[in-house]
Length: 461
Image (cartoon, rainbow, N blue to C red; front, side, top):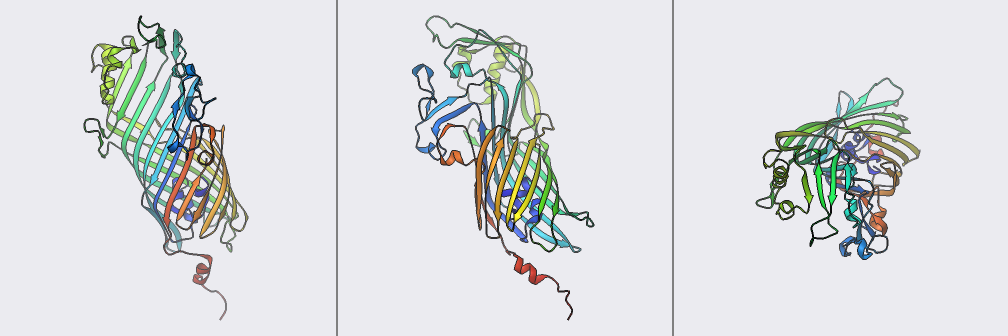
């Protein structure tokens, strides 16, 4: 967030605001590679650890019966054990991309082309029945698991960015920007529990583990859909297109800028991002509605099976539910919506090169089975010069998790994080992190002195 508010962020900023590349004074902007990784969850954590310390740490799983928990032991994978759990994951790798400035009929345009590999997973308000096993306590005899949905998708994206000014006679400077995106679906999974599932627990047979009860599921209404490029027979990932779709980002920005000044005084921007979906025409669908009661724990047909693929597992469940491994198959084809959101940005110049920026991003799922990104409020302070930029930020992710970070831009290298403390310091409960890295080129570097020399002189000879 902090780096994309930098006026020299170029094509990288088009992902969150299609108008922002227009502000870059350089005629060309080239991204060689960038990667952004974000993780946040309230289901599991690692105690007394930092991200940088994980490679050397010997992580143990919590065992309350042996008094090994995250509360009293460092380096333990433990669980929050809330009634509902949430997980949000996003990775965004931007490949070779560029933007360029063009003057058409004495009007400035910025055009760009970008390529991305994106992965996103969203699990919100998941009914956490797993907490009983995590706490090593018996499951209740009767339990109702409430409806939930989970979406995961891995996809490529090729986008065209364009931005220019509108309303030429306005006192303010207005910029309109758009990203037109072609989506290439690679892998996806969509699991929906449409109604309450009744779970019943009974004591196991004599001689079996008394702490592992028999668990039965009934009155279920579940759909499971998936598509993947992983070949479970050869144990290899075979890259191919499994789905396709279109996406749209649209933004409008108002600048308050003195024509004689290089920098704006204030900026207000409104953006709609990721409007679209990916259609997996050959994706596999299974549906389980009010079949037989299924024993989901201590069932030898499930526990003793060697699962080699999702399809094998779903066929076993179909055999248990209907006495026919093919009965649950519901045909081919499903859609996954992009993680649609609104990004509102306000930026104010404090003095030369110094800016305060505020961003508000709110997810607004539009299509059925849409991925969901994190909601956030971000405020940052940055110093933006031609060869160097840096800033600090604070973020309220999901409107409840307070995070701190910043970025630095040194020539072609950009390094940043909106949640940097988990990397640097040990956390009592390590459960979230974010990091961003980019390598860029600025060919035909431009600056105020060069622009001044190019200006036509209206002075009298």
